[in-house]
Image (cartoon, rainbow, N blue to C red):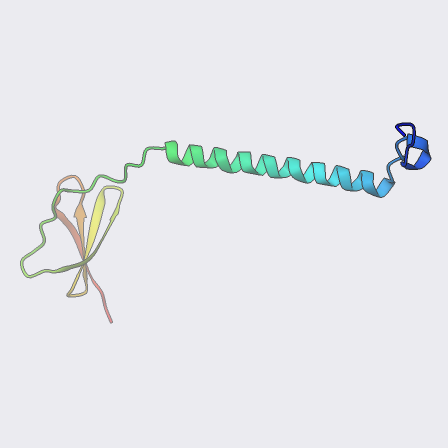
Length: 107
């Protein structure tokens, strides 16, 4: 019984159809692109999380004028700003903490 072969062409491998060769090449190329994409995402994550997470240097406390209530704070290079409940923007020097400018918000 071991001599009996049920494969077509008497046991020889059938030649690959052109469509199957194309599909095999396509699957191989897509798998390669997927692997390269995953490696790129991994590299981006490693680069992103290895950077220094320190934010800007902010003062320990901000002294506002009497009767002023802060609603928001933002900062920039060398300054920080406080938006008050009286619709003013107070801009302070980051190094000294002195008031540099006051902007009144108009309705």
